[in-house]
Amino acid sequence: MGLLILMLVFGVGVVIGMPVAFAMGIAAASSFWYEGFPMLITFQRATAGVSVFSLLAIPFFVLAGEIMLHGGIAVRLVKLASALVGHLKGGLAMVNIFSSMLFGGISGSAVADISALGSILVPVMKERGYRPDFAVNVTVTSSIAGIVIPPSHNMIIFAVAAGGGISVSGLFLAGVVPGMLMCFSLAVAAYILSIKHGYPAEPFPGWREVGRSAADAIPGFFTAVIIVGGTLSGIFTVTESGAFGAIYAILLTTFYYRTLTLKSFITALTGTVRTTSMVMILIAFASSFAYLLALYQVPERLSNALVLISDNPIIILLMINVILLILGMIMDMAALILICTPIFLPIAKGLGMDPTQFGIMMLMNLGLGLCTPPVGTCLFVGCAVGKIKIEQALKSIWPFYLAMLGALILVTYVPAVSLWLPENLPVFTAWVKSFFS
Image (cartoon, rainbow, N blue to C red; front, side, top):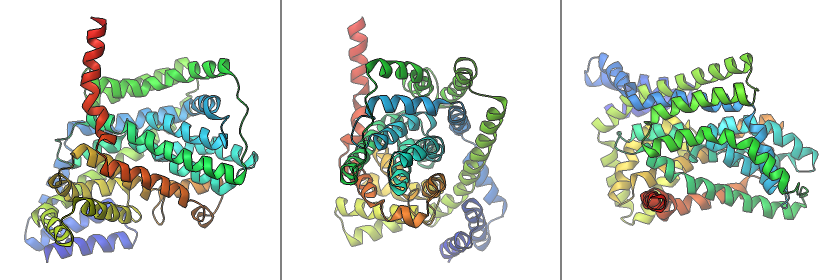
């Protein structure tokens, strides 16, 4: 009965439009009350959930991304991408995807990607004869790269939800190849559609322009280098690397690019506070919610239910993916990471799946939810930027869905896609040290 109350109150809260964090908090408090526990436990568990030092990295990651978003780095990345891949068939679509891959590694946010790159590229694509729905769909689906390619604050949320036993630096490395694979799959789909619809290729500007664009954009990449490289090398903790990355972003956009004004800085701070507050409230109440899920043995019961359906690991992983895809259509990504990780991670580990591989699979899967109604944040933002109706975008987005699903299947069933880089990095590091010694 306690579990029924927990799920019923939470479900009603979500259906009536209550913020997910508050729905989880009220549901947890209701179950604690039913079980006869003091109401204070709800807030004790919530406080314990956010009393984790590594969570301090989240506001620093978000601030670095906001500074780069409002500091003019997106324009430079678009110029570099245009110089490199704009001459291919459907050149601006390739530029869009490649820019998302580059900017995603700096901002770590899909919505920031759409806001920054979509406002630049979608109008240009429409002027060059691309269909508005095609331009929006390319922008929306490629923005998911920001969730997978490091640094990503969603990886920190997953590590915390997993109980703190997963290396954030390992997750950073594991996301590189899947993120690039996703962008490559989208590029193939865009190339085929560009040939079908006769979209133009841009003229190649020459290698001198490529070099000039790269020299202008490379300083911005060092934000990601400081965050990821500092963490992997052991020089910084995750929190310290986020802080140094934010400081570097501020200094770079203020004194080198000279594009960060006081107004844009305040806008970046406001966005950081808003995003961080939402994430922290979610983590706090999700901690109380997850405590009750463990108390009612939900992971064990669900695992037994899945085994009754099939004992084939391939089928079980397929069912987990389907469940996550459906949930991703109706709930926020951060909330689902916090709720579903304690449930599905033990099942995946029981099947022999590496926790890091499962984390990347979950992030890619839930990223698809950002592109699907009724709660597809990226889809709504992309349609607003492109000034088209959601129905118009959904009619032609399915080739990009298929491309992303193909990448997701590879990550799910081929461990080397996500684990090859983290497993071999020590070997490459030792080789480099021996080469220079």
